[in-house]
Amino acid sequence: MGKQKKKNTNIKMTKKKTSSSHVWLFLIIGIVTIGLAVFMLTGNFNKDSGQSELSYKNQPYLGEDDAPVSIIEFGDYKCPICKDFNESFFPLIDQELIQTGKVKFYFLNYPFISVDSERSALYGETVYKEIGNDTFWKFHKLLYEKQPEDQSQERKDVFTEKFLEDTLKEVTSDENVKKVSGKYKANASEKAVETDEALVNDLGVTGTPTLFVNGKKFEGNTFGDLQKMVEEAAKENKGDK
Ligand code: CA
Image (cartoon, rainbow, N blue to C red; front, side, top):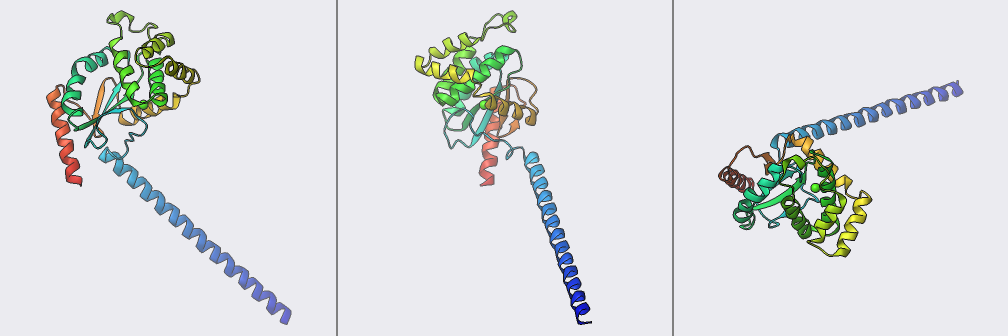
């Protein structure tokens, strides 16, 4: 009898243990489910607001660190409209918005025209990573200036590795060029281009040049339109604070 009683107690204890394991299991499932729901809700919220999702980390920029508004240009070094943009529209942005401390201006790659686009995007990223922001912007400007005027050459092999090296030589030392070319050959900046391309997809960019002002696509045509959008974005930022 005594033995059996003991046995029964053991069974009871085991049962108790099992039900407490279930409670823990349900509790854990509950916590994970709630966590997942909060995560999904936050993700959607960020998507709707169109700002928090955008990361500007490790991207080259011009302007003051504390400029209240950020503009991104998505460009392709082989795109003729990008060349026009950089030579006629960008100087206004620089003079009126960047130099005045109103805007931080970022360049991101959307290389889609030809192998030249891919090569120059990768090379530009390597210049930025290995030599720095200042040399990147000199190289960037020069590359657009050197884009062939003749549109029929658009898809030919113009921006070869040799061409990119020679272009970089015009703005930095031979030693730096050697460093960049070595890293370029090793595909060191492939991930950086992929990061830009992922943003192209996320933001639904379909052509170049495309501008985003604090994460919102610029749909206007004139510099006045852009100026207005920047002023509104600056006001919104002030309102948030
Ligand atoms: Ca980039």
